[in-house]
Length: 610
Image (cartoon, rainbow, N blue to C red; front, top):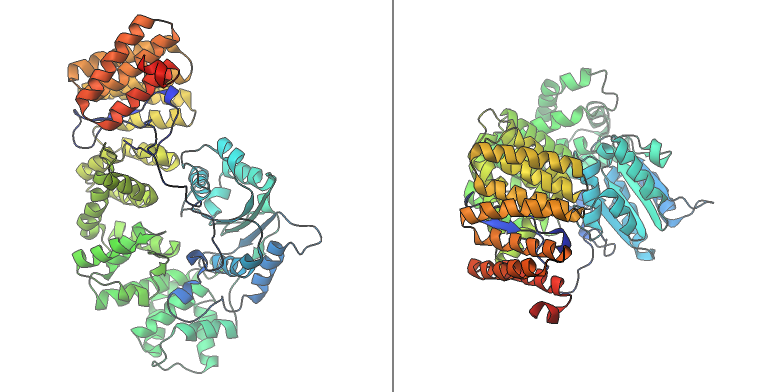
C-alpha cells in the first residue's frame, strides 16, 4: 500500500495480490495520503549556479577544468539565447551533436554562467536513455513536482512557468506523439525551452546549434589534461595525428583514451589502438568518427580486467543505475563483490554527482550490452546474484502494506531508481537462462509501485507478460494502468485476459482482485449497476478465500454504490461489515480507507459517525 497516492476516493481502490504469497495479501493503492512535512522544491528545479547537476564532468573527476575546452563560441551562443539578446526573443533553442561530443557540457556551462542573473525558475529535465514519449512525460512530470503517471494532456495544463533544459531528446523526437507534445510544450505561454539531442530537432525547434568535433589546440589540451603528468607524451605535432585522426576530435573518446595513460605508455597505447581501432578507422559510413568511442571503451575494459577482476562487474552494476547510483549502495556492492570504485573513477567510467554516482549513457549502454552477450569480460550471470539481491531487498521493503517510516523510505527509493529495475528485469528477460523465479518475485513486490511509473511500467509489464508463467497478475496490473491512463477499451481487454488466466491457474484471489478492478473501472465511468455486479462477484470470491482486506475494500465500494442507488439499508449493512473486516485485518491503512469512505458517504464526519 502506498500512502503517498492521493487518487480519487470515488474511483475506488486498486487491489492486488501481495509479494509474499498469491493467496493472502491484497493492497489498495487509493489510500489517502498521510500527513507529510512541507513540500520540498520540485526535483528538477535548479537551486543556483552551484547545483551539482551543473558541475562539469572533468571537474568532478578532479582534472581541474571548469568549462569545456574549445567551446567558447557555442557557450556564448547558448548564453545569447538565455539572455534574450536577439532582436526578437527566441522561445526555443536546440543544441545538436553525436553522443559524447559535449552537448550537455556546453548547455551546463551556459546555464551556470547565466543563473546568477536569472529571474525565472529553471528546470533541468534529464530524459532517461532510450526513453520514448511516454517516459519523457513521466520525467517532465517528476521534474516539476508531479506524478510520473500523469498523462500528456494533464501535464500540459500544470507545467509551471520557467525555462526548461530538456536533455537527451533523441528518442522522443523520433516518436510522432513526442514531436506533437514537444510542439505544445514550446507553444505554452510562460515557457522557454533549451534542448539537446543527438537527432535533428528542426521539425520542432528550428535551426540547431551544432556541437562538432574538437580540433587543434583545444583537443590536444583536453588530452594532456587527462593524461598522467608523470607519463611522457610526444610533441604536439605527433600527438595531433592520434587525437585529430584516430580519435577524430571526439571529446569523450579523447578523455577515455588519455586516462588510459594510467595503464600504458603512449607508444603502447598507440599500438593497442592501431590493433583494435582499425575497423573503426576504415568505416566509411561513420563520418562523425563516433566509432572511436567503442574502441576506447574496449581498451578501458581490457585495462580494468587486467588489474581488477571485479571492476567490470562494478561497471555493469553502475550502468543499471546510470542516472544516479547511491553512494551507500555502491559502498555495499564494493564490500560484497570485494571490488573498488577507484579504477572506474580514475578511467572516467563513473563520476560523482551530488550524493551519488553517474555512468554516462554511452558507457552504460556498452557495459549492459556486453554483459548480456558475455563479451569482453562482462558477464550478467556473474553479476546476477549481487544485483538481484540488492534490488530485491529494497523492493521487498517497499512492498509492506504498513506505512512505517522504513516502508515509506523504501517506496521512495524504488520509485527514484525504477529505471534500474527496468534495466535489470529486461536483461534477465533477454537471457537464454532467464531467472523466472526472481522476475516473478520482483514483479509481485512492484505491483503497488507500477501506477506511479505508468509509462515505464506499461512497456515492462507487456514484456513480462510474454515471459512469466503466471501472467494473470501482469494483465490485471496492465488493466489498472490503462484505466489510470484513460484507455478504457485496453483496460477491459487486459481485465478479460487476466480473468481467463486466473481461471486457468485456479487463482481465486487473482480473479477477485480483477473483478474488483473491473468494478472500479465501471464506477469511475458512472456505470453503478455494472460496478455493483463486479463487486458482488469479487465479494463472493473474497469470502471463499477468507480474505479480510479484500472484503473490507469491496464492501466499502458496495456501500458507495448503494448510496448512489439510494438503497440505505444495503449501504448501512455493507458499511458495518466493511468496518468489521477492516478491524479484523489489523492493518491501520485498511481501516483508515474504509473510514474515509464512510465519511464520504455521510457527507461529513458527523454524518459518517451517525
